[in-house]
Length: 134
Image (cartoon, rainbow, N blue to C red; front, side, top):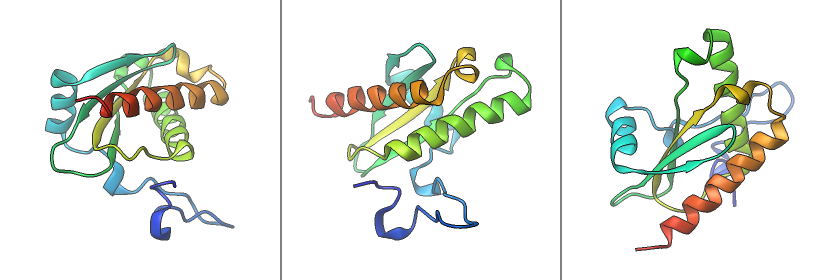
């Protein structure tokens, strides 16, 4: 089941309404990003790098996105984040308690959205498999 749609709280899709990426599944604090970068593991793909770290005493996944200024101006960086958010939203969340940070590469802008979705799916499979290990 898609955690973003659970209880109807995450998905407001319909005529004239926007689908949301709820605050409860977003990684927001700088300290959390730093912790994932320093203590977490990495998964490399052709258009993005995914950092992930198991959370203690928590449920569900929180996802954060970082796009450095070196990847372009604000318009390009925001477009990258929108594409990544939508790919994650369409994929759905995994049941593991993880913090995930997705860091795109410049090639993400020219990549087909299907390829972005495939890379997100593969990264989440790796994360879920890693969550099953002690």
